[in-house]
Length: 441
Image (cartoon, rainbow, N blue to C red):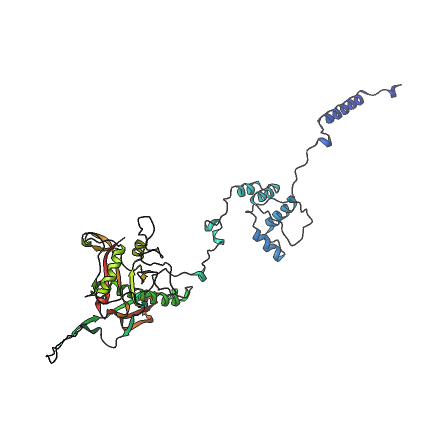
């Protein structure tokens, strides 16, 4: 009977095992209740900087992971995180995040929290400065669309009827003219005849030099686009020609300046706008235009023929075209109006053509006419020139000539271009030119 009973030690072992199984059962979570395991990737943490796609691409190109082991791990981790699996092992390709958030996700999966934090705190890249990406976005200069400065047209030389006459020697030119005709008379049969005497006069015209000069480094000459010589020759000729045109109109006649229309002697005096005899100038009105035409006709000049002209600043034409009648209609632009001056806007063929017609006389515009002249107490005055261009001569000792030198600035490695002209303007019959002064806006 003794062998049918358990010993005390056996009973203790049975109880111990039962208690252990019970505790285990209580503390063990069922398989269906277990949370999913955190996905991890098999990489080794290393003390590397942030992965660089350029390094990874070079490693793929040369087929070696030397110096790119972190980039290889990063690509492998990205492959697993984004669902490409491990079947890319050994392939010569990389998987790389497209955004900063994806990069952080890959680094977190690698256990590289430090690098993930570094990426998260990195500044946003932009082309605003070189350090954040601007160095990769070079500026573009559209050289093929290079634009030259806006300039006024050349007026005097292009007036229909103007003569350009070469001068052979010296700087002083004398222009003789018949100043007053001798006339005729009547006499009785067999009466003594009296001689009529003609009056002659002579003008003395002094030619002056007009020039442009440009010096520049030879580096600029070699590197500029458009070609520097091309730019210089075009603009230098243009600028000297424009300076000459300004001188022909308003040269002061002193020092190195020629005598222009504004200071020419013995011209017909134009009507001065404004009240009280125009002492301080005034706003130009249509009566001033009518009086100017009459003044020329009174000295036997017909401005309405093919060589007649008005030359004025655009401000003056603007003032005239804004004149209205009592009903608010613009008088000058009333093309079909009764007893109103004729006007048409727009530019006729040719960049230097007339821009309008007043009383059948072409109007030429140039912004080179001053609009800050002093007349009495007014300091905002301008001139209007009216006349017959067939009586205007441009005298030239030499046309505008270009010259280049690569020795003028030898010590500084510089070169230079210059353009020089010697000329003057003359009116063969000065009364064929009229100047209206004191024209205010």
